Length: 325
Image (cartoon, rainbow, N blue to C red; front, side):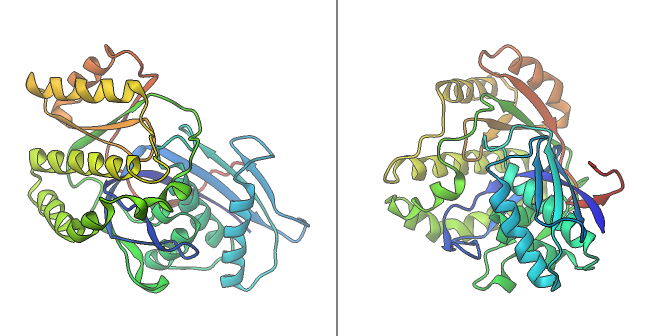
């Protein structure tokens, strides 16, 4: 009873920050994201009577901070499947975990699809999205293909993600500039509990549905300039809420701000690129594919970028034939 799944990280274009239910991970607002073909997690799950307890191997290490959270998610899936079988889990990222590049999203999406597949549960995409959300909120967005909307819902059954457009819908590129691969001092889960402390949080929620309508229109029209302007404004708004929480959350590093200013200068020079980010110091810089090489060449000249990863819009989480053990 073994299965393996490969799941993409996703970058939120209109972001969620704050929850109405911490246990079910119901978000304060709906969100829009894009799956990334170059950043992914691969997970193998094997359920067997020979295991007397769950065994977790995370990026090659038998002991991991993530083990408890992974086992808790397995317990949820076991409850749904009505089984008491223990499992061996091996999971591996091709990018730094817990550094603000949505490793929990790809991780719990892959875990969900692999575990449900290993148990022969035969669930549809919506059902898998609902289960993945309960492991990590943004994991539900890594289940469907391409450009995705996560409906906030007001119950577990109504909070799920679905595809707006397939991966090959738009020829744009997300250039991920990794500034730091260190684990964040404050996780996104912990940080979101502070959201309501910001005086800017309530006005954000009042405008969020209109913002979602606007970006869906930009996507429908493939209007890159307006798309870029809204994702950049959204990223800055979210940082403002983080910085005005109590205590303040400052995920940026000095190099983050330097590169942001550099992106603005590139636009003034005619290279149309726009940034966004998650809760971390690393930047996602969007550009049309025709300008991909030009942007990468410019970024190579910036000090402080450890690694550059170019990502096209990616497919959702899928089972694969190659196992990790």
